[in-house]
Length: 112
Length: 115
Image (tube, rainbow over all chains, first blue to last red; front, top):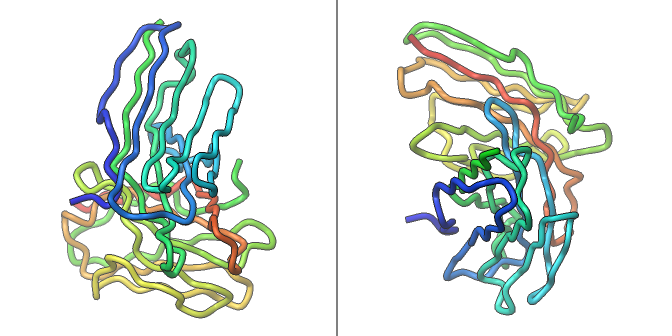
């Protein structure tokens, strides 16, 4: 069982559509990060959220950290083909040795 | 470009062999992490070094070992290789310290194929 569950696992949408990816856990995290990974490359850090209820925006991407710091979401507005990739959430468990625990990822494909 | 470098980019070897993967962290980062990514297991944490000392261990096999040198570069040694060791191996680095977030920056990875 994954400590961080991501959903959906796969998502294929048309250019211009909106989408939301979820990252859920029963555990509390002191911080949560979102990464985007393209095939054959390393994950690239998009954002870090540390405060319960925090919302961060990065152009068309909106990230939210749940009030209880157990979940997070990534919303993309007007998706573009360049948004295609594997989106990974990763968290630092509260009280842990600060190791990152990764979710299983959401593979997003945006069709032109 | 994250500033983390890894060599080689690709590695093809046979079962039973030993290989060494190399990683240079971002300038100023003291922590180095190694991860294994395979299709069925996702991104799995292997081991962390901080300023030359082992800091944490994850799902690292006994056949695997790592070290971090005084210049802060790190090597991951994989021995007695099996077919199932074929995967992408990533190195990441972070500043370290006691902050909440532990933001990590990943290298481009080494794709290991064991035949």
